[in-house]
Length: 180
Ligand code: PRP
Ligand code: MN
Ligand code: MG
Image 1 (cartoon, rainbow, N blue to C red):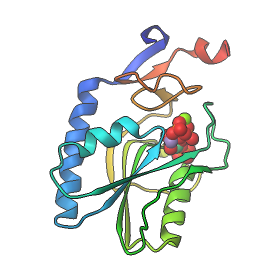
Image 2 (image 1 turned 60 degrees about the horizontal axis):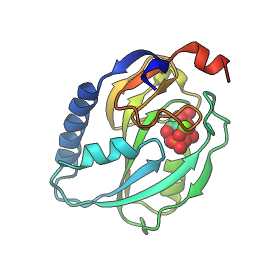
Image 3 (image 1 turned 120 degrees about the vertical axis):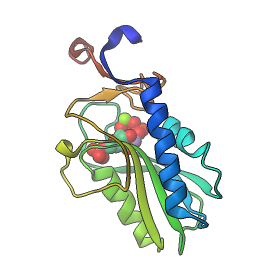
């Protein structure tokens, strides 16, 4: 798998440092509140667990599986809700955990959906923010890194459902896309 990577953008220790910083920011923001933390599958799986593991605060966890890239490098433009949360979030403080905000379509869909259900607050924590990719307005409250306009994989992020289990975030060699 490593052979398919052109360059590493964020190493395992860069990511670990960012997760610890974000965990502290989240704990100090929520204080005694008990948020419902929603991990956005599949991309946010590693990021969510790494951020919340050391926070020493009360929280509830749930997961929502949404998809719009279908393994490709381009957003289909349609965000599909594959699996919903089971928590009643009416009147609750919700924290969305994302791996990346690119066009912003996924995040806008999530915020609109959770707002309609009566969440009392919605905050967003994302490992990667790619402002240059934005098509619809969507902003995050807790951000790990601002990324350049490149398609990245690893640490949850996939190309054709693979590379999610790389421990770092990197850019694929161009021939990986062209051979497929
Ligand atoms: C990716 C990523 C974010 C979303 C960001 O998910 O994990 O959820 O796209 O892109 P956007 O800002 O352009 O909407 P994807 O649809 O690939 O599903 P996955 O998490 O299962 O890989
Ligand atoms: Mn995703
Ligand atoms: Mg994907």
